[in-house]
Amino acid sequence: MENKVKDCVFCKIISGEIPSTKVYEDEFAYSFKDIEPQAKVHAVVVPKEHVASLAAFEDGQYADLSAKLLTSVANTAKALGLSSDGYRVVTNIGEHGRQSVLHLHFHILGGESLPTNMGTR
Image (cartoon, rainbow, N blue to C red; front, side, top):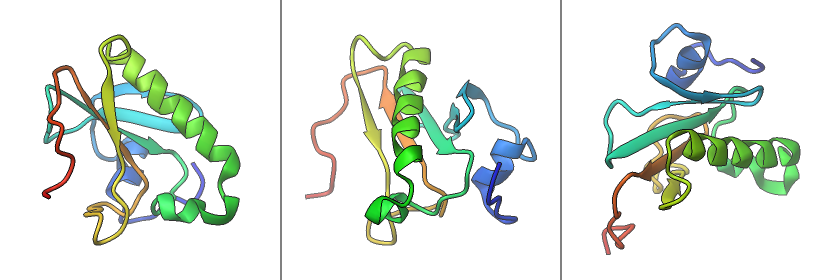
């Protein structure tokens, strides 16, 4: 893994320093079950390379990685059995987006009919 950050919880999960329940893994991403699920099925997909957030993708800096990550998200949803009924993919960016871990990650939520309201307003 490139750019591992010493104190990053997701870098530690990817390296195996912190245990997780793996859902899917490929060369570019690692997916695991969320320890505080917000839906019947809830997994997190993280790139193996440390990237702080989706904002780092501005100006095409990670153009090659972006397509590979979206494929990893779709493959994780398939591994979770969510492809036929649908699912939600969420990424939080920065303070106002409520990003809690400064390592890009995508939440996959499904396994049930999700609420229509995606915000507080």
